[in-house]
Image 1: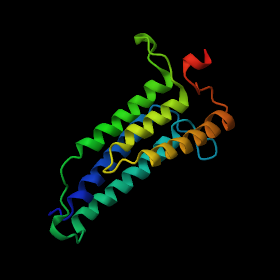
Image 2 (image 1 turned 90 degrees about the horizontal axis):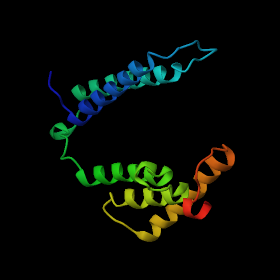
Image 3 (image 1 turned 45 degrees about the vertical axis):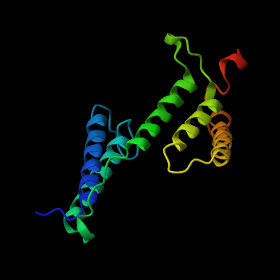
Image 4 (image 1 turned 90 degrees about the vertical axis):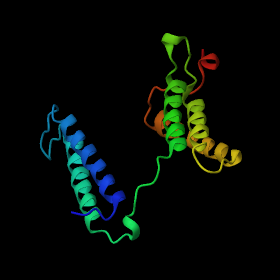
Length: 162
């Protein structure tokens, strides 16, 4: 068989592998029934759907009519680094690192750090737009998680709240 679209083929394999990993990871939980779902029901269902979707996408890699084989390009190292670093930074800012003596900075500062660092992954960085997005996401996150869901998250830095 000849692969006609490398992007479809390899992305389908990735989806299939992730779906199978979800199904395997949820296999130790009780599945339950449709009427009384157990903790493994949703991850198993999600993994099965992702696996089927991945297989279908993999098959389109053999039948695609893409010009030039739709080859996979080079790794985008800069966006990969900044996105991963932004998520790690959010975790550290939200909860701190008590073993290293780093106090928590709270949800608001964590979201600002996440958005600013993640926006460095793009081609263009506009500080005004990034700050507006940070404010909107901070307000939305506060309303959703702290006000509506009543989650006990540190909202402000430890040196402000004590």
